[in-house]
Length: 588
Ligand code: FES
Ligand code: MG
Image 1: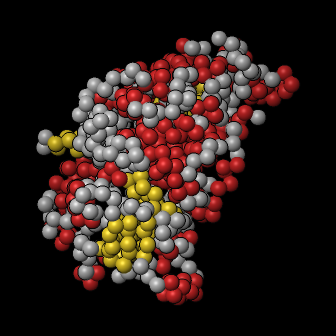
Image 2: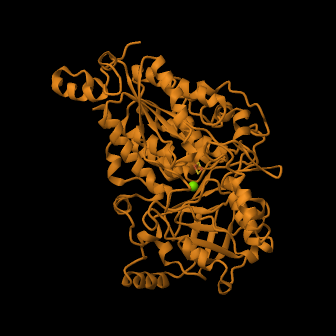
Image 3: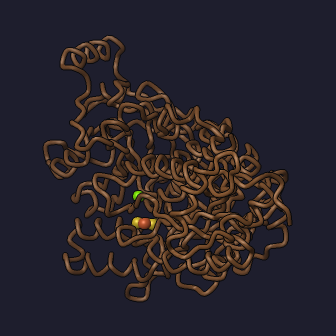
């Protein structure tokens, strides 16, 4: 097959107009044994963006998978050049891994545009690695394909499946209640991480890799293959083969990341019970791709889609069952049969998502439910607003029966409730005071977490899903409603109202809320309002201004300061505002 236009890499290695520069560029790439013939004969140079390292255990096995990627690339006549991405480890990076999504994005954009790379394999896995890579691929706009690393094997403890994160949140309640001791706590959480791979529940990692596939950016069936399975290595090989032809076909992210592709991803997210981090990351990818997508699209496109996938935290099973039941293609096929998949969205293999998946069988109907018998109807996100913030989302697929019975109408319809606000300023404040008897927390309370948005807590931390105080846990109340300007882990089964934008640190209504205020949540009207008189709020605003505004802790590193100065809200994807004007930059 012929390449329709000169390879980008020819400007480095084969540029008659700059023969001296070509010598300079060429010479150093020969020093590990490549030959002039290889570099000057029009073979596509394929970058492998390596996200695995000892610092990113969830992606570490990509170091072995890349060997299979290389074999695929070489077999199709390409040359592989592997390079490291900035590590992003969800649980190991302090203060929060979200701080590094934009940093890894920036680094990858510079690599993809500044080096002789004709196409790239994006190795993804842990939560922020997929969005960082896709954002960069969108900005650079060279042919790009996602190879996800796959989830860990299922966790097991005393005969029960244990899911990463999801079980952690249960374990911390059991520990707070005194039902397990500390060694038992470690034992239970340790059981959830049994092998190489990313988290094995439908947390942010499984979600973002599934959505990469739904967007059309990976080969069909890629996302759900567990990391240690042989099919993962086979997928790595096929991915390496395919990217070489993508370069020859000049099939770029701009051909794939269309509005239809994003709508497909939103629909799939509802059907799989995907993470509340998905809107942030998908909006960020869309902004870098130059596609119109906003927070309201999540409710418009995604709310009335049923939950089909029975996987933790919204359901029962884990990654291995999802794969055996058919993975993303089986979910897409079920949605497509009911007219919910846009049929004009192309994927990396050149065919549309709908065509790729149309015949994919559901192999276990308890894991991937038939459309007519879903786990839940209308399983998307609600987009809320009011005098506390302009927008926040609520994941309806994790609203438990207990929550419905306590706070919503007996019929289970969307409804309203009023609660007494208990306000925490950051996770340290929560830890210090959640057991404080003077707060008199009872089941009529709503817990608020603020100061944890992209500016208040650089990167925005995953702390909105707060546990109830131990006296309530012991009395059988497993959760209180939680609202906040931060995020929560995608592994959490809490129906929090979160990602509130703008955040308290930007001086919105949330900054004026006080413990004891009454707050009305109306799920039908999609509103959250503090029931505080306007003159009282105005007086509080003046008082806050006199103190210099909502307190923002000092940055600890240069990057924290740089990001805070230019980061957008969670509802706008938490992107670096000046970065979004640079689109399709490697084409020119
Ligand atoms: Fe990396 Fe969950 S901590 S995927
Ligand atoms: Mg997380």
